[in-house]
Length: 191
Image 1 (cartoon, helix red, strand yellow):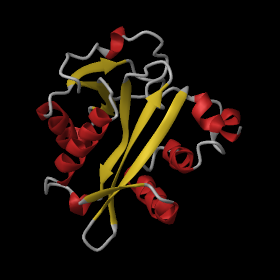
Image 2: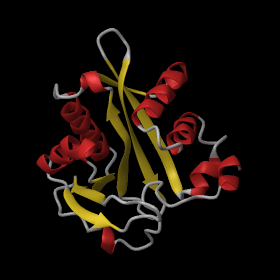
Image 3: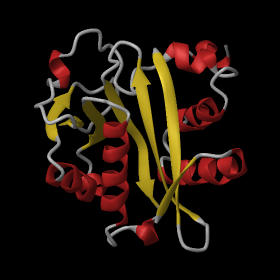
Image 4: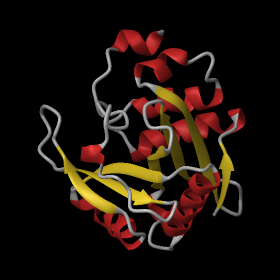
């Protein structure tokens, strides 16, 4: 699988894949647009206190999009980046494509000079293979309080990508948002 920066010609396919992989979420639709047109989507970025968001699409040998990954950079944590919207179509799973894609993202974050790569997921059974992948790569896990109405455990994974142990997410100052998990008023998305 080859990873390429999101391009306008792939936007519709990336939006479709994100909706298929994350049907209960809507933020990826705004994030994909903000990645391509940050000036036009400053309301999205400002509402989440983001400096920027970047997406890559994973392509098979025929050019079809088989996976997506993004990095969120928060203004309050300039030395960190968050892996978000990371996933593969079901038929691409179990073939080490996820491992290669994660390794590529880790290398990319290192090349950008980041010290820590973080992500969040839940302990729901469908995410068990991904959790095992994160743990094999050396990510440290900690629980984060559930949002109202949630019945699962939310897990924050942190990886020191500069050779140092990462600061636990629970000890990071100015961290009132968890990579899009804090509800944001709909009016701020339209700005």
